[in-house]
Each structure stands twice: as structure tokens, then as C-alpha cells.
Length: 159
Image (cartoon, rainbow, N blue to C red; front, side):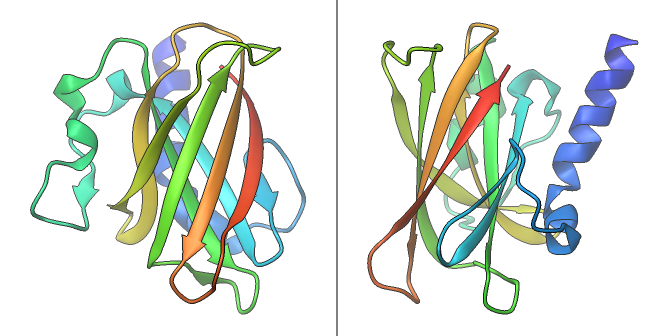
């Protein structure tokens, strides 16, 4: 039963890119909106990834590689769409900060989310250590080359 739920979660994660194109505007833990963007979140244990994510930048190993991750590593991924025309954002710089705990008093981990391909479409992702079952806050800052400044969204995620 646990294997089945892991397979279903991984399938849902990989389908995130396609799902986001057709999803409605209802808000939930995996969908947030800013002034200009619709942002969709996917989180999956690194241990479930059996092959390296496909790189957009071919000259480096994406996120340091699966083998380099700790047992507590989770792959955090976002897909971003412009509200105007529901067009996928392909050229952004994206930074994520993951804070553990309900009171968020533990140390935060901040990393760039790197461009990757999922289902042939651009998404942004990286590995974060999330060792404990419980609440996490994931803040995502988007710097889009087509707009000045940045916009942020916040996800409350429970592992």
C-alpha cells in the first residue's frame, strides 16, 4: 500500500507541469498566486527519484545529483505561469527558502531553484533537507526577466 501511494505521489509530481496548465484558480497548499503569477508546488522525497532530472543547462549536474542527497532530502519544484495569458515562465531566477517547524525557529535553508525539464516543460527545482515529519514554510521569490523587481509566494507544507 505504501509503495502504491509513493508511485501515485511521484506520478502526480511529474504531472504537475501539465496539471498546472489546466488547473482552476482555487487556492490550496500546492497553488499560490501573486500579483502577476500562478505558482504550483511539488515536493517529493529524493529517494523516489530514480533518474536525474533533465537539465536545461547541459553543462552542469542538476541540483548536485540524486546520489549526493541525504536520506532526508526532498525535491522541491515549482512551475510558474504568468496570469496574463496563462503562459509558462521560462526565464526567471527563482529562490526558495524552506523553514522547518511550526514556530519556524529552526534554521532556514535558502537555495536557487534551478531550471529543469519535466514532461518536456520548464520547471524550477532543488533538493532541501526536510528531516522531520511536520510543518514547513516554503517561501518562493521570483525574479522574472520580463518584469522589474520580484514577487513572492508562501506555501505552508506538511510532510
